[in-house]
Image 1 (cartoon, rainbow, N blue to C red):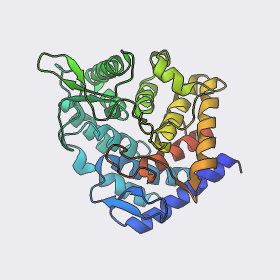
Image 2 (tube, rainbow, N blue to C red):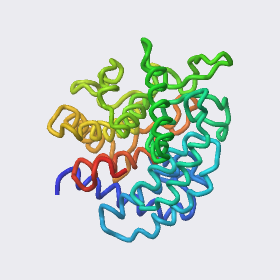
Image 3 (cartoon, one colour):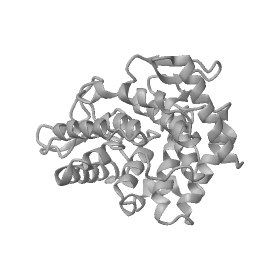
Amino acid sequence: MSWAERALAEILERAGETEEEVGDRWPLYADPATGRWTTTGRGSWTAGFWAGLLWLRATVTGGDSSSAASRTASLAPWADVDTATRGLIFWYGTALSGDTALRDSAARECMDAYDPVLGLVPWGGAFGGPRELARVDALPGLIPLLSRSGPEGEHAARRQLDLQIELTLGGQEAHPAWAARPDGTWAPHPDPPLGWSRTVGWLALAVADAGAPHRILEYPAVAARFAPGSERIPAASAQRSSPPDTSAAAIEAAAALKLADSDPSGPLRDRAAQLLGTLVSEHVRAGRLLDGCYDFDRGVATRHELVWGDFFLALGLAILTGAIDPFAC
């Protein structure tokens, strides 16, 4: 058994322990010392990652999938909630499940939320703050979901992706969030802040799933993160006191493996293997990916195990070892 296969087995075993601990609640982040989870009643924007991790466990191990199916079914109330994170919730929560009815229903709801004037599905008001935002973390999952809604949905997905790339990467620095002005122009929004660790990962993941890698790798901010010799674990924030964010590296690894699918012997696959190797050797303990940063500016879970960090690390390892196809999820 290779190091990647061993690490994947440990993460999936940890998922079983988490399942016993949280019951019918949803894990969000776990204390680095005790391993105990902070949970939510409905799963918040991370619900799809917990359902997805249970599906990864069932798929890789060949074990029972009833608990994964139950979690996926529990996502249904999110379908008509005003949030662009429905992409994260429903794509990653259903991709391995075969539940096309729920996925298609969510895709229709997202398409109904598309604003042709703005050229996107707005961030939404479900979690507070301004509704009409363009954020990089709205893209993953949303792009493939929209694309399931026929030619109109494919057009909407391309338009939103193009807009976000232009906004985020069109200037000197990569701004993850933008607010719509009344005159139809866009202004940088401070949340998430400039220098946010997950900016490149989320954007690259969405572009990879859209099948257009050349559009992202040409930009200096992205090329710098995927260069062979660049820092492997990005800082959570541009501030000097910022801790690392392993969840960002896990997202980047999954994105790199997808981008590398057309050239499996190229540098992107090597970069992904480097990222995954560093995460496993330096930041995984007993199947727990530590040193993830939920929200540095607010001081929330700044060096913790994060449910999406575990998911993307498991996803990356599953792709690297050939346990699943790069675009299965």
